[in-house]
Structures are given as C-alpha cells and as structure tokens.
Image (cartoon, rainbow, N blue to C red; front, side):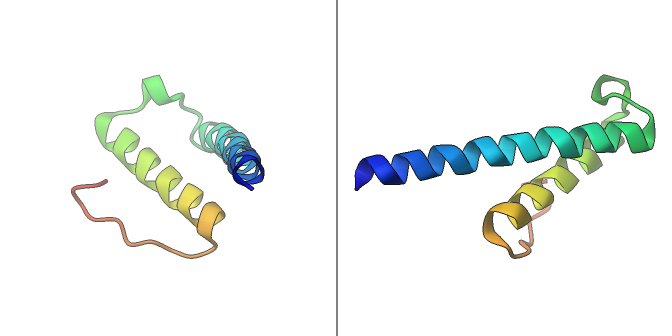
Length: 70
C-alpha cells in the first residue's frame, strides 16, 4: 500500500512539474521576457501566479496565500 501511494505521489509531482514548465513557458512567451530579465516586482508576481496555478492543479480549489508567503 505504501508503494502504491509513493508511486501515485511521484506521478502527481511529475505531472505538476511538467505543467509548471508548460505554464512558465507560456508566461515567458506572453511577456516576452525570461525570468532573469524580469524586475523584482515582475518576479514576485510571476512566482505568486505560479504558486496559485500549482495549488489549483493539485487540489482543484483556490487558496488564499498570505502576503508573507508571496
């Protein structure tokens, strides 16, 4: 049972990381900037957006992140 859980968790993590990569690529294509080229404010907004997208994909619900977390 533990092995099945670990396999499912690993699969979910791989899918999430793949989705993050696709989302990050789409973000870069939309803004025309790479992460390294973004200002500090743009980076903060980008990371906050990605955190929300990952949380939404993993749980199917929206999370309210605190300002300290973002």
